[in-house]
Image (tube, rainbow over all chains, first blue to last red; front, side, top):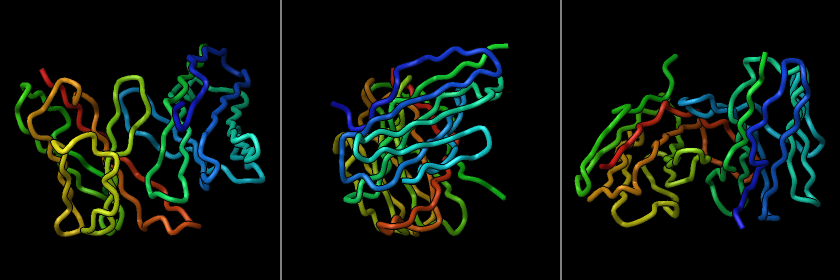
Length: 110
Length: 118
């Protein structure tokens, strides 16, 4: 089983739709969690950190459930510019490296 | 200001050839990371430097892969005797301080080097 798994995608949604991505991680010692966004043939960029209490940034909401080892990202009122691959990232307390999930591709259609 | 830069952006190598990939991190960033990203996959960790010290190289897939950061700024990832399975995008990232166990600094990624081994 991979250390970080994500919804396989792709997700094709119309503009204005609400879409949710799920991510699960296997290491219960994981301490920090993030969502990165990667546009086609570009480098990953930090979208948002994920805090235990959940956090919101505009149209984006991230949730963490430590008991179920599960992270989610909700995008409301999706825009064409939201089309990208969304990468779930986990850091464990025994290492300094980021463990990336395989990514979920989102296409927002006009 | 300038972000992370990598060179070359594209590299085509014949199987068995040695290659060297360069990363210029953001000035003053202490931590530097190398990742390998295969098509359709997320980046996979290769190695991590704090200043000139290579603190973790657990992700390097074989002893053909070698990374260095001799002066704590520019880093080079070298792949000896390249194989077709080495074809991927190699990403470099830097951050302003190391992971302390309770705090995190955002990793800024370079554009990557796309390596194709024929």
